[in-house]
Length: 334
Image (tube, rainbow, N blue to C red; front, side):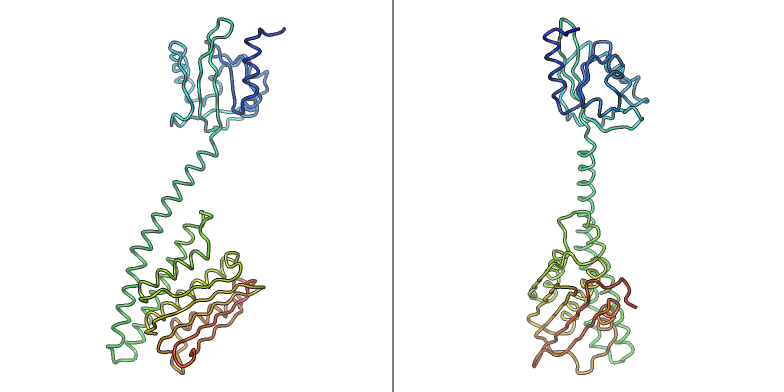
């Protein structure tokens, strides 16, 4: 049987809509449903037609929904989507779908009906949750950086200042061990901050390194030069972690020991290896440095990845560190 012209038009509009669209009569029965509604709710069109719209509401909300629907029929008005309400619809298999619902009263062939537009907002709600999580992570990372790391580093610098006032070698060694431990704590905190931000695709290894250099400028009294060449952001996580740890250690040593006025860090990632070269114009390293503490840590990290680490005087003054490891190194070389 051919529908009246007005009904034909309503059916055409419903079918063309990208959202699930249904035409519901005063008794809450579904009189038309478009393809999007069939897909969203998992019912055949024949099953939807004539069914109560209440069956698409979560079971624990059906009684309340029936009352709200009756109130709407008594005083129908246009209600747009995006009201801020947390609404859910129920599919045939019982899955609850986060939705926004818009209602528009219409009169077709003298009968009052309602066009219900239902939009699946699962992705939008996930995006809002993701943004809220990122915002909270950024706050935690900022607090860790601005409050915790800076205070630990300042404490380490204070302890290092006391070392020169101590005559007993054993006591100096123990104080140096404490500062090394504080440096390792800072490294771990930085890694935690990096991991907090890893959900956000905008944060990269190169940006983490740039932030580290910028932070160290406050304690050095100058901004070290930084040069990065090659796809550093594509390094395996365990290699990147050790690279950042070594750079942190090297910059801390310059701040504590070098009395330098300039420094540079060059990172080159090419082929199957990555190198880190750190130079300063300070007092220079001792002819026979003790391979313990921070120096030992840098050498050990390179060896663990199957690489090498050398530290030597750079010309008449200053120090040069060259740290070289394969990018395809196993997680533990030994």
